[in-house]
Amino acid sequence: MLRPPVRLQWGLLVFLLLSGVGCEQEGGTSSERNNQRPNVLFLLVDDLRPELGAYGKEDVVTPNVDRLASTSLTFERAYVHQAVCSPSRISLLTGLRPDSTGADWWGAKLREHLPDAVTMPGHFKDHGYTTVGIRGKVFHNAEDGKGAWTRGPIVASGDWHGRGYVTDAAIAQSETHDLGPSIEAAAVPDTAYEDGKIASRAVEQLGRLKNEAPFFLAVGFKKPHLPFVAPQKYWDLYPKPEIELPDNYFPPKKASKWALTNYGELRNYADIPDSGSVSRDKARSLIRGYRAAVSYVDAQVGRVLHALERQGLRENTIVVFWGDHGFKIGEHKSWSKHTNFEVDTRIPLMVRVPGMETAGERTDGFVETVDIYPTLTDLAGLPPPPQHQGTSFGPLLEDPNRPWKDAVFGQFGRQEVLGRYVRTDRYRYVEWIDHESGAIRARELYDHRTDPQENVNVAGRDAYQTTVDSLARVLDDGWTQARP
Image (cartoon, rainbow, N blue to C red; front, side):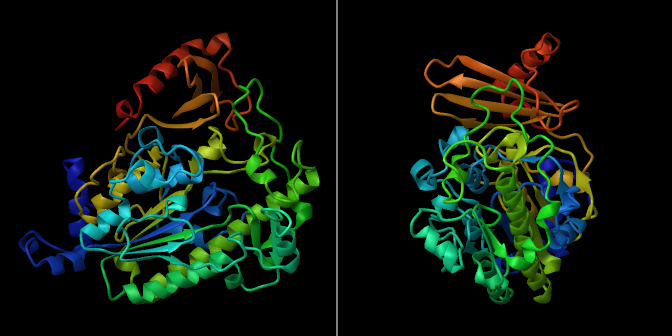
């Protein structure tokens, strides 16, 4: 790929490479320019941590995502700004961070906080793209595209109460408890569960969109979000006797009282106790269910990617694969998300650009969810987003080893405090700040050189005081000072 003299010119250069346009062709009609622009296929997966073969997790069966990684740039250090669905997706779709949007709780609605923001699909639509959303979860609760979709959001479900149960026993349990069981396995085809239906709708739309280029197709998959439901054949990939609990199946030492939650999301399910730990046997079942759901959604991603190739669309389509946040499956003897730990905030991210010379490579460059919107507008040759707080990582797609961001930032609050974090090359530093007084109530520091699982808070140790002071300044300076 060409090495741009100025970063802001990079998207235009890629656009010219993708389209085969030379300087003598820069004119042309609006229709011709649209036809030369790359399509975008955006695959969003709910609660997906980097629990994938492509990320070195060899005991997790994800052949389709692994194949995508072999033709993409895989981001080893991609992070979300808040480990909960709605704030994370609002950041993705607007390019704005939760402390700016005010959308900082799971039920936040986009238009209540940002009535005039131009979302990513809306921006593409405004510039001549056919935009289609398949509703598993694209906007989450904020499923208000406000003119963002040419078609959609297309509803693909029909399952029981949106939870995906298909067996009589699970449905019966749901009728006496709000959310029913936390797991379900049934000897049914993939399309019996919701993500199979979502994949089918996406395949149908690709057949139609090949005649409506350029297009932006967003496909939101629900699994492996709770409940962990999937056809039996995916459970069979993980025999229960082989399931092991995490190495750090214990709370982190010296962590603040706000660091972990009581995993209320999981406790909502009928087969989980209202208090106390889940049994070790149940913990193994939950881990098995999560992995079965991951393999199930991998198969649905594969169906969509195969359809893209069958329709002859691969060579002019950018593919983005993104998880909205991480998820604990027993780490720190806890479950779900809603914390500031690495396991909650680090996500899988892969980007494939037609003709890219870095296909199959990896980068350790720090990237954040808000960076995706400006990156895609760069790659498509569109004007920058009307509003955003990210940085296009287009240059990393050209040179994965180039110097990049010094740090990434995020947050998660509790009733009385806000936890703000900064993640640098070596450390994760968290401050818990009183909502009313603004005073720092507690600090956490995890040294990834000696403690990559974040099992010991060393913020109180004398040997780390200089580091704590330095990272406190980095956190106060914020993301504007950490840009490449």
